[in-house]
Length: 170
Image 1: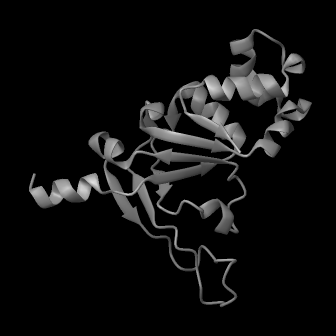
Image 2 (image 1 turned 30 degrees about the vertical axis):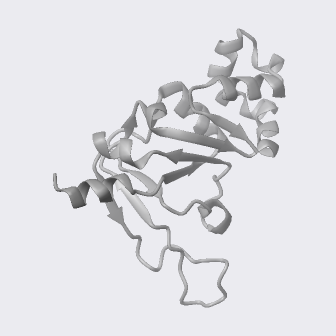
């Protein structure tokens, strides 16, 4: 490897992955990001959750150590066709979101090893205490040895904060 390549590698910007809270619980339980056989989409746009009009599931943001990830996974720059993503912050009908996207060629196993920080929107955690969402709490129930109806908001918060995903609730 040439010095120029090493310098570029060490200066890589963090990558981000956004998802919903139910996906966060699945990731914590499996320690894997992505479905088997499918690439994982990542963005360099830290504020993608505030700009995206088409993705609703952006309550969770993983900040990913790009240098570490590149040591085990190939990252491929990717750009969706311009007809896919409209930028709601610009009134021009010819303007589209710049996701600054990269993809891995396969799911990321041992995902916690690559996560620098996980931010979760606090207000949306309350929804997971509703009976309709108890299916997402199986790992939380096992952790506390409680039934879903006995899980409190504090239990959810404790579970997330004690996970190895460096969770910060905002």
